[in-house]
Amino acid sequence: MDLKRLELERAFHDRQAAERDLTFRMDPARLRFENDSYLDHESWVRPALEQLGAVAGRQILDFGCGHGMMAVTLARLGARVTGFDLSSGYIREASARACANSAQVQLLAADAERLPFADASFDGIWGNAILHHLDLGRTAREIRRVLRSGGRAVFCEPWGENPVLAWARNRLNAPNKRTPTEKPLRKCQLAVLRATFHDVRLRGFQFFGIGGRAWPGLSWSRCLEGFDRRLLGRVPGLQRLSRYMVITLNG
Image (cartoon, rainbow, N blue to C red; front, side, top):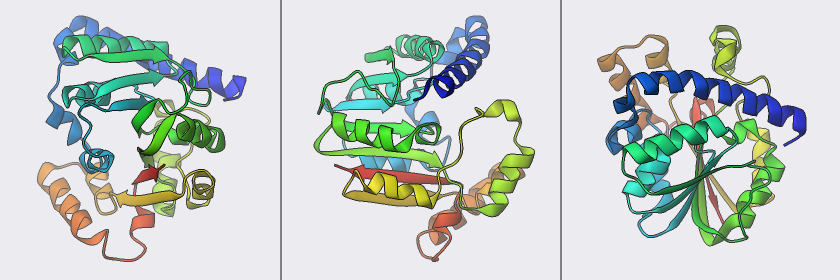
């Protein structure tokens, strides 16, 4: 990651972590959570984790661990978890969350484009909303380097092929909710991943479900998610217009 982009990203996420830290200082109980509450907070998280396969006893890397919720979830499922993030503020939050949930997790601050791990260190890699912040070529090579032969990496990423959603992201989202350099992934970038991994698989989530975010309502949202489950895999073209894409990389 070039120096200017590195510093912008680190400062942005350290600032977010500092704001969150005030909340947890006032109410430490909010650090505790159940696996299901995290796995079901977005429609793609549980299906994406299923792509990683059984994790018990395996070395799993939480790639850009952020708040540490997946790192804790993986540890409670029996994985031997290492998590890293560029933001030292988020590493402190993830450490506090692991402690609050009695989870054994190794955590450190690191740059995703220059990983401090030996070759073939991990059986599997998990990442959520991280690749679109990074230089994809450098990152793909690092993922491949630290992933063991036959291993699998699974990433959940915002997807940029829906023009209406792109307009909404640019016009309606608050600027302080994203870094200046991040952009949703596009189809043209998949060639970069395919240059490094022989098997790249995609599954889109939230086409109809986007409406549930624009007009929140539990029963309405569940209805739209039902349409997504039934139709996204059957109607050509809807996958590429999804809000999020689960990307599975097989080593």
